[in-house]
Amino acid sequence: MRSFGSDNHSGVSGEIMQALAAANSDHALAYGDDAWCRRAESLFRDHFGPSASVYFVFNGTGANVLSLDLVCRSHHAVVCAETAHINVDECGAPQRVVGCRLLTVDTPDGKLTPELVATRLHGFGFEHHSQPRAISISQPTELGTLYSLDEIRALADLAHRHDMYLHIDGARLANAAVALGCTFRAMTTDLGVDILSFGGTKNGLLMGESVVVLNPALDVDARYRRKQMTQLASKMRFMAAQYECYLATGLWQRNAAHSNAMAQRLRAAVESLGVKVVYPVQANSVFVQLPTEVWKALQQEHFFYEWDEANDIVRWMCSFDTTEEDIGHFVAALKKLL
Image 1 (cartoon, rainbow, N blue to C red):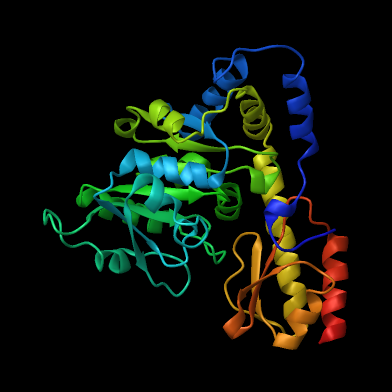
Image 2: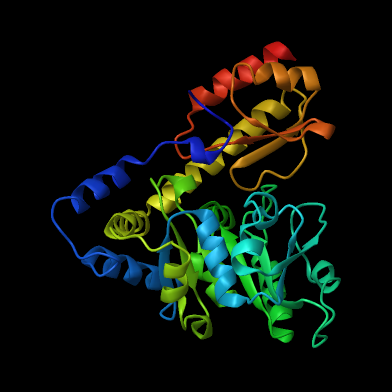
């Protein structure tokens, strides 16, 4: 099976498997009290700044929920795009676990702006209204678009003017950093981002995501909140060993650069067939509009998801292990149907 459905469908980088095997050679203390975790934590500080602290969790939903829990209480609200993963694809986990409200905003491209966020910033101090406490953005967005550094800074400044925090859902943050040609720190800490969900499984890791606390004021009781949320791994060294390899060797950059490049190759190939690409291809996703009979027939040969069936928009995701041959077969099948 070769899938364009999700970068979660990809395998695991060989380097990561080797790192896991190396970590499996002896015993180690549990719950993060081991050498792998200490080295990984040091690498996170190298990449995000000396004040950064990291908390490994099992999955992306856990990372987002823990991040929001460190920022919000049940009477608070989070402003996010209508298309945000925390709103669409987490089965109400933030609302159930944190108890906070999501204030969604319709956007043309998946991106919030200060003007759009401002429409939800009211009722401060009014006890009958949920109190806006955080802005949450995805980088890249669920539509594959990117926030510029200036756009992130503007949202951070807006949040801080209202005594709020800025959270980034960075499940594909490596793809964004490569596309923008910047470091992780330049895209987060230096812009005033307060807390970050940092992903790796979409870019070559086996499992395990992380919460990176960039604002020390939020790092008060994170270890206890993580435990209460059932996100504390006993054999945490196997999460840390992956991130040590990922961050120390530049694997994050190589993998993301490849998946981004494959998306551009796919975009160029389908555009040459006259296919309409509906959103800018800025990371590793390609959204296109096709006749119903075409995309449904193509799904019989290649797995991918319809994104907006009413408008015949489908999503194709490229991964770190997508090959030029994969794209060639896919485009040939599409050409035949067209």
